[in-house]
Image 1: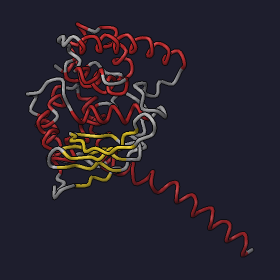
Image 2 (image 1 turned 90 degrees about the vertical axis):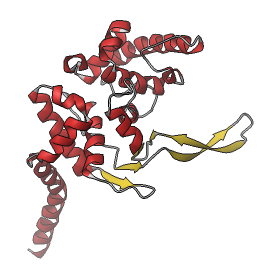
Image 3 (image 1 turned 90 degrees about the horizontal axis):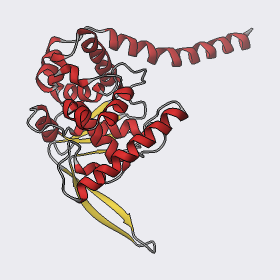
Length: 270
């Protein structure tokens, strides 16, 4: 009898371990969205005010899940505020609308610096020689559960005075890219047919951007995307959300591929 009781208690404990986090998440999402949060979104994520009510509600629920599951860490003396959290979470969750998602499941920490930060990178040259160099960055996405951002550049994109560039959209596109198991410009697409179509479209568009960058030609897609396929996907994502009309006009096939993946059409929010 004692053994049966012990096993029952163990099963109950295991059940609680699985049920309690889900219950807490449901409570977090069900809480009323504070009015001050909505005010921050209208100011710092301007498209929020132009979105239909159903997408606004979706975005708020995604933000509440993001804030419940991710830990924000201020670096170099920066104090994390509601404005910082809401602005970053709001932009990151724009990429998740209308999609079945666990909300960046591999991400645990968002590190925020007041300004551009320095990262030390190791580079392996031919012959195996390893050198180290310091690189000044505005943002970085890591596969080991971190995204790092410079707050002054997050705010700069909020002002809509730098269209086509948004460090939050860029770094969280890298997070989506890595969900396929490799950060290579192809996020998780669910089927071989979709991967084949994606590869065909993005390979051609990547080559066109490399040519434009080589000849210093104007492009709606930032030339930094010519660095490698992963950066191309991140930069194309920025253009899709920030320069949707121009991208749709100049690169309709690429635009439609991104529209199919992101399940929204940002041109409707202009």
